[in-house]
Length: 365
Image (cartoon, rainbow, N blue to C red; front, side, top):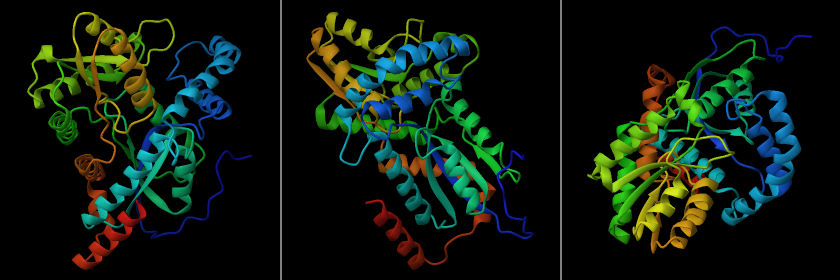
């Protein structure tokens, strides 16, 4: 039996259709234990996420973690779940729709934008298969991870390759590796901080918390640690902060092994014990608010800081649907599409552009 998915006979002269896929980490379907068990099993079975010998990890995962963690994780998700569903899914869907609108406003109606999740739904494989059925021959993947890492961007590329193993006629492919130092991204982060300061005043210290990974990833050549610090440095410079006015930290440590340091929560606790009364905290490694920003940072870490003597903990939201971030996302997309953008064709006439844009933006509300 052939491993390839059945395809219609190739047609000569077929027009090249171009599509963009925004890929986020993923989210469970519901904030309940069964949904979390399915989600965590897929996430923690990824050997780019957990680099422990397979047989040993299978016993730990299925014998311990998946028996205990789903219920605890479901409680955390329930604390941030919205009427529309998971915060990450809500923001991701809105970003897809707003990027469509941005492209139409630029006169580009022939390149379509799709969304996918590395874990959960809609999956990368399902999204690509749907695009294949619709005739797409050029695909740009945009992993929504500003700082590149084996466990994030690398995993997305793995999953894309797995999906294409069953395609006989593979598409032309491009992907964005990272955008840790992109000027528009840094400018949007800085603008969000300045707006927060204008509304709430400025705290004594700024903490930039990034998702953590095991320390040995750095030793084995992963660029993530360096890219996080580069983002932190550029953002500090954009905000005219001295090196002592901000810190780069790492959150979400899992297990007993050494991870990238300093760890966010212990750092906040020590700052409070040392007399720092107010902090501004943001998560530049996330472009959409999710469990790790809204529950872990804005709730758990806030309680830890206040509990150790701090008085003011101010969480600065992720970029989410900010207009300057959507503009940056659009510019990144256009840059990475290169000549595909021009060859895809344009909408003619201002009236046509405005009408198409109104339809796209109306669909996003």
